[in-house]
Image (cartoon, rainbow, N blue to C red; front, side, top):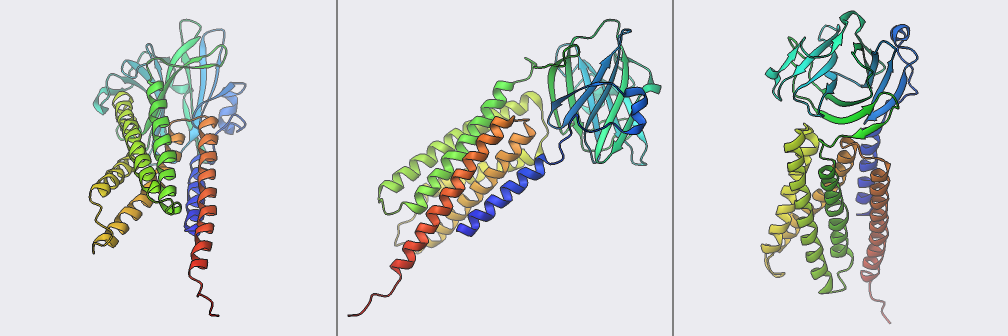
Length: 367
């Protein structure tokens, strides 16, 4: 069990490292082909590994370079009048199937692909000034826009998709965010149209339920059996409360998805799988046979291994959720500290348990 706990720790840490590796920053130099027209820009990280470089001259021409990690698909930056996707216009760039760069303006008239219309929108631009460059697994979307006024606070939408557009048809975004950006100060403000409170509730409820309460309940069941029957009542009570809080977190996640339509299949898929395992654990309480039943060993296998799978995938999904949700360092440090304490406790208690078992199994000395 100690080796299993160590393996879980290595897998979770490796997953977190892979999810956050190679983050784009302002220290990354622009590709050489962009230096001529896009040098001297201010720079600000804005979301996940998205970096915004910008400059607005005295003629109200805004030069922009949006960069992020890239393998395939498209990247877009939308300008909205009210913070919502519908009604906004976006500059979108991608590398086509033949390796050619593409930059188009799109009018976002609805949430379906048919209502995202290419070569339309209220942004005034010169197509000759636009370009897309991919260098060292990063995409740089560079464009220039002309405004009739000096741009200050502006509602911005960022999005990306994993599929290459065909015939200028954008596939549904894999993820997106919205915020207000002040082009005079470089400060970012959350948009009231985005349900940040709901996102925090979803994250906090699930982290506390699946990442704190349920592991504690499992620890009680494995290592404190000598405190019979107290361990059983504590185990059942904590797991039931954890499941109810986790279910509330799932409901918050469904409500969040209905509002922002974020397409994060890995996070959603794992969440559904974890919820199913949680329901199976609740059913296990009602299906628990007597200790002398011939079915008891099968019930033990079902209960123990579904619980272990639940805790492992819950840890992975919490790390993934913090990453895709753009959680700041307080979320990462907080959960990392919690995970480290739980794993150290498991390793220590497992060592004590095996030591006690080895002593109990020693043959009784003869006198």
